[in-house]
Image 1 (cartoon, rainbow, N blue to C red):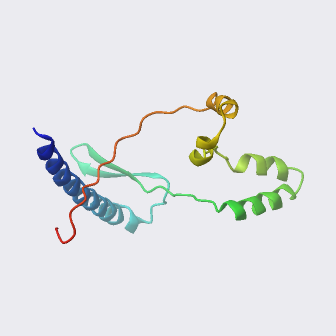
Image 2 (cartoon, rainbow, N blue to C red; image 1 turned 180 degrees about the horizontal axis):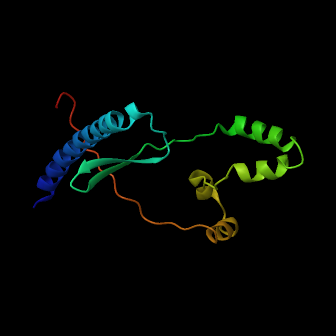
Image 3 (cartoon, rainbow, N blue to C red; image 1 turned 45 degrees about the vertical axis):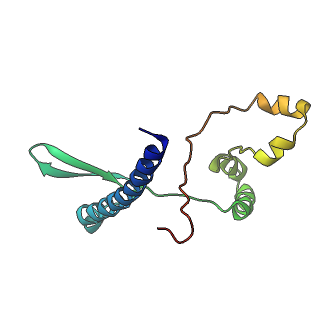
Length: 138
């Protein structure tokens, strides 16, 4: 397969994958709603539906949590001031994960870089490809 053929095939595969990924999400949501939503099943828990002949469908709709950093810091300060255990609870309630600022990392001098490199692991990511069509082309 030539590079041109591989590029065209990749473009087709990418479009098909997106189409089927969207369809899979639609069907998954529909099935969950039909089988479990109407029964008042609680989100965040695993539920089972008997299909017959010993087959079962297990499903779970997770609950996603996202904190606003500024509001979270205020809330944690407030929790710290509540009762004897407030500070202990606030310390355990939220996990702060370190995230590297790549732009700042790139500016570091060797002395600083060698120190942070002790805590840093890098791995190559999956390459991305984007097909750019000429203006007016589909």
